[in-house]
Length: 164
Ligand code: RTP
Ligand code: MG
Picture 1 (cartoon, rainbow, N blue to C red):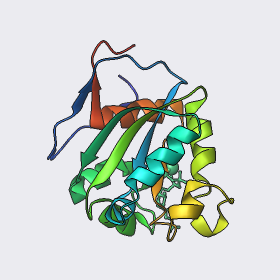
Picture 2: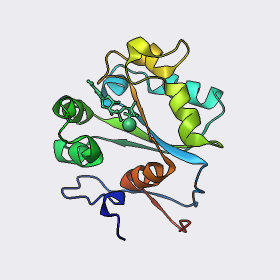
Picture 3: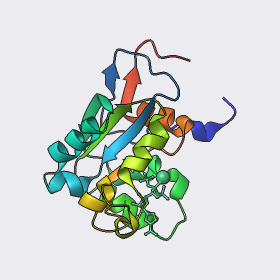
Picture 4: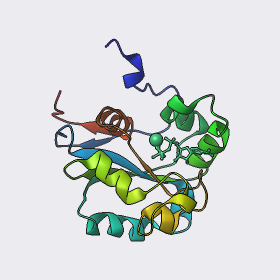
């Protein structure tokens, strides 16, 4: 593949990928993460309930504690940003929950549900408004494109019979 950034290689993989036995169709899914600080606060149930009540299906979930190296790999696109160290340290500070989330127009719909990056600027009713503490500790991640949704799902899960 020419665009190497599309793929993530596990340089120091400390976890095995979870197998899912369905094929994901472009445009219908995204990758969400409940960040470690929100997991530590005990928000998993409340957040997943809000996601489902908002019309999304949760097709897969994985509880994993990333190493610092894995967090750096997952967020490689932000390497060089002033917040990179704070972000990767917080993402490797404890277990997170990775979610395969399904809905039509999943990427855009889920980003609307989670709200603006800075919880202080997020709209009322969004998950970051309710559960976020700061821009880095903003409770959730959501893929920003269909291409990155595929890449990020593949980071945590292996699709059996995946659509090519
Ligand atoms: P995400 O990727 O986590 O869904 O968030 P996003 O698209 O809204 O924001 P992005 O620009 O992709 O940034 C990724 C994560 O880095 C942290 N961040 N901190 N100025 C800052 O302190 C800053 N900017 C970004 C946030 O935790 C954000 O979710
Ligand atoms: Mg982003």
